[in-house]
Image (cartoon, rainbow, N blue to C red; front, side):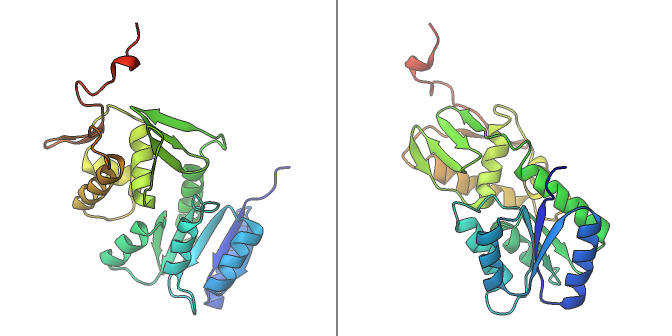
Length: 241
């Protein structure tokens, strides 16, 4: 029998924590339950859970800060995080996603939907448990270590830019609309305005084209974006004889 996947529940409201534990264990997960951000960071380092359900409004270290520290850690930055919060404004959703949350669920929520979302972010984080290096036009992404380089130059990306680049690296030369990118990178059940895609594309361009290299992200007017080498950008040594 395979070991159960472990979910770290960080929730200071006892009745919600109890409900989460009961339903997650019923769904076949092991559960670690804590009530503060400080204890959460300790448990992540100690037990290395498979995913985190994180309340925004924690005493002491906030859920926002816990998420930020997870993403700042080279060891845990790929850990799936779903933010649980009573805040339903779009600005709060965008803030949570921009700072590394994989999904955002507003209280009150239905357990069946939450568990479905949890399984989805875990699948995306570990699509086959195989270590993979994605490469295109000098860019390399090691999905196991989250290291990204371009012609051996290290590229430092925020979590959203990382997910955006990974999606494009897996499908080079294809044009994707802003709506398609939102669904793939942010999630189809998350409402974010399409102009948010433009903001993160600009940030991604700045990161990967830092030394004046050819721009690998093509803007297709009225259509969207594609990861593609510009004409004439390929070096002669890369052309097969």
